[in-house]
Length: 126
Ligand code: FES
Image (cartoon, rainbow, N blue to C red; front, side, top):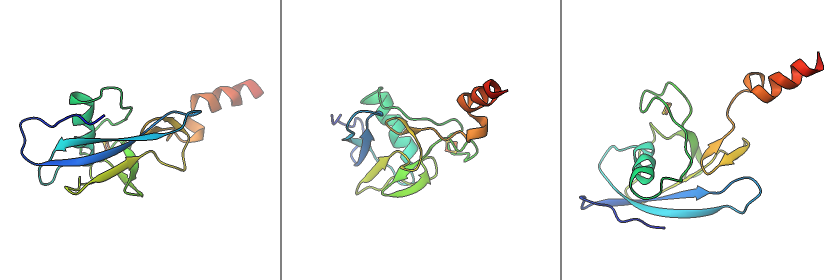
């Protein structure tokens, strides 16, 4: 799917890896309105708002770089989407490859000792 940008002369392509555990992943490219200094998070939020609300992504603080929830792979490097600049020539975004995939760009980033499943398993052991 490639939704057209609106009310903007400049656009930049963002390619997002999609998929869930147990299914083959695929990519989708969206042309988003581009402005100097915008972040990858800005582009993903635009995609979710204007093109495809089903893109799974997680963030909380938006540019404060405090929540650490927006961590993804951008052009092969692990970065925070809220501080990574969107490139006018194109940006590829995917989930972290060293974490368990939940869906699309969302991975399980909770430390094991804070994971509810781990806590319940530990309690069950006694
Ligand atoms: S949105 Fe919180 S660190 Fe990026």
